[in-house]
Amino acid sequence: LNPELQEFDGWREAPEFLLCRRLSLGAMQCIDGKTVCVTSGTNFFASELIKTLLEKGCHVRTTVRDCQNLAKTQHLIEMQTQFNGQLELLEAEFIEPGAFDKVVEGCEYVFHTSFPSDHPYHSPDVATLGTKHLFDSVAKHKGQVKKVIITSSFACICGFADGEVPGGGRAVFNEEDWNSTSTKDHRPFLYVKVCAERAAWASVEEHKIPMVVLCPTHELSPPLPASPDGSWKMPWMYIKAMLEGGIVDIDFPIIDNRDLAVAHIKAAELTGVSNERIIVSHAHKFPPSWVMSKMQEMFPDIELGKPDPPQYQEPTPFLDNSKMRDLLGVELRPVEETLRDTCQSFIDKGMAKPVPKGQDLSRNPPLVTGVKPPSLGGHHYTTINL
Image 1 (cartoon, rainbow, N blue to C red):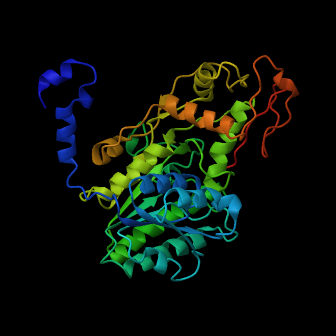
Image 2: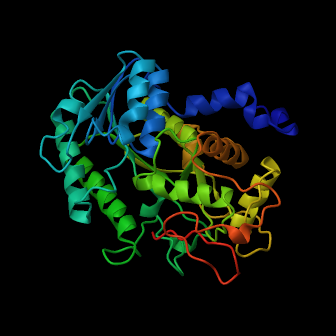
Image 3: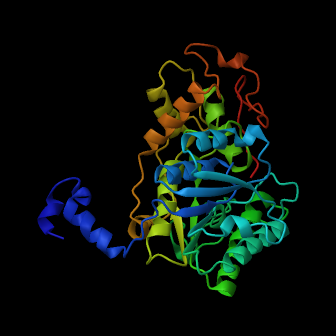
């Protein structure tokens, strides 16, 4: 790279730098127009990924548990109309052997976005078995499937437990870390995710199938599903609570689902990226005071609640996302853009009822299921049991 390029701001966007970076990432096989599979199509992220793939001309097969459940599938049915002939909905019960055989057949790429977290048999054993069934189906079509992309979770890296620290004396978490604090009894929802990812690595070892595992953090974006479900419940509660005057006392790293979809596609297209585990997220944790301050700037006519603690805090480094940037070449949109677009979508769709500026928040009822009143009179916290 010409050293003179580094003399001005924005040199990383210079064509010369971008060309060098692209060459370093290896060959690409364009996914446009290919037949692909996306599991669990009704979930928050999978819906965004499906939309992005359809826009690239892909023929997409996606699994749902019940095609007739319009509360969960209506947005997919609308995509079928918008992208005539490109989207196919197939019912599949992942706990049954061979459930994915028909779904995977003829596909060049398999995007496994998750197993339904609200499944009545959701457990570590079932998640492990479901993962095995998927890879067994892929193994039957190894000659066709070029790569499997797994949507895991940052919860497989960090369990957000008190006193939990990165390994190796590092200041931030990276892909070498594993969540060892969640168990069947302590934050079992996170433990199930850990079991599912470990099962995926075991299946890759058994079947010798190329795979990339992506570990996103707290997902936000304008929602496509109409109702909260599974992993979508947490961001729904988070945004709804803040827009309706609640007090939020949780801080998270954040990823925009639109950027996450791009990361999945690049993980599929880059032939030199295989058997990798990659965090996809902004590198910082964003305190409630920072988030609410930005939201108040964007929506000055809304009476937002107060963060806990009330003192303003800057985002703090929390994880290393260099593999996302260096291996996949993914650059993330600003968090402010994600917050603005997500909140505006909630307002436009009537998914949140903001409190007008100047209204007394102490008169608000509890906002959503799971909130509890804090010691400060009148307001309400959002409590999310991980």
